[in-house]
Length: 295
Length: 219
Image (cartoon, rainbow over all chains, first blue to last red; front, side, top):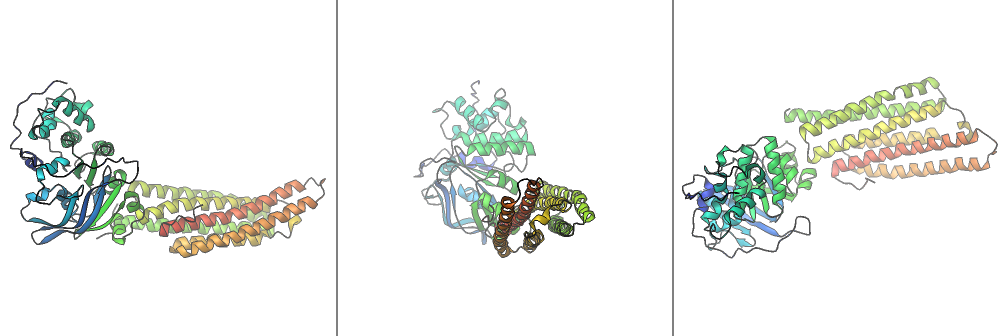
């Protein structure tokens, strides 16, 4: 792999994801890394939890009294009808809702036991631990290499790590390396939709987060590209925790270990093992929703 | 397909499974009548009619596969389709046992075991199957446990009948060349009746799973 020394400043990106990361003043909080746990052994640790969480946009309550414990190294799916609050919950985890002036939060939302809305938590540092992948692939108008190296550069870590190695590692982690290793200097925008989304995943994991939030990451992709992302998610949970919002219930059933069902009013109606949700949910409203009888 | 059409398809599946069970139970009762009366024409009609049951089974299997492939049912809908898929297999097997019974009806030798009331046991088993299908039709979880308990009584009845046949064997003249054939045929008949009861319990077990996600009657 050739060393890429493109000396572009990574400012002025228009995607919302880049705004928090562009701040070089990172205040480390006491968010610490807990003991690791495997997907296949024992009871997993809780990595993200909410306790009586309410989220408002102005006077409108988007989330209502949500209490949940999300296990690490698992795929947790958030499902529910449009407007039920599932994306609001996702954005609350890494404080992307901070960008909406009218948004405010009551209750606690914790990452490794630390309330992320405490005053001493820096949202930029938080988003380094909790990355995000969006519905539509949104690579920067830069080379494939620079897309992946971006996060490390803005963190000022580009001098501390072997950037080539870090880029390769992230691209391999996103199952994209073999397809792009000979075209790293080409624009990320020239890739197919599915490749672009995997590039975004590579960009997200390059900074070594602990949690990856995904908001309908395959809804803009064809079934084959979507299938590759699903396979990738299955591999990602070896190292990361994945929390995914999806409107595709079959996808939730296929790829997730746990499923949270939100219904209108921002209420978390049921949270359980995915197999149980799709075979025998406790709540009649969940049964009606997943069998298509809801509304 | 709209969700309303999907619900209609689920409704039709249940109706069609019940229709298949009506055909199977009627066919088994005819086999019992043929056995009781020795009516060869009636027995032959049961044997020849088996292809109709097989076709019903294949049609319903196709309906279940189509529902799974196109609608991906979940939760209660999934348990209903999965249970129906299993139940039609049990019904098809009872159809085969009706054919066996009809075949025995045309063969000699059963007068040797007059104290074994094949028709009575057979009627009990088909009543049990009808009760299991009624539970399936009405989502009656409570009835499924009664069906399992009743089958235990039928098993005991069959066990006593088998012992009667074996006792006859021990007391019989060993030079009787027809003996072994008659004994084995009667034992097979009793076993077939007992199997009808087992299929009724299978239907009840799948119904309990379908209604309450309760697997306690599955084996």
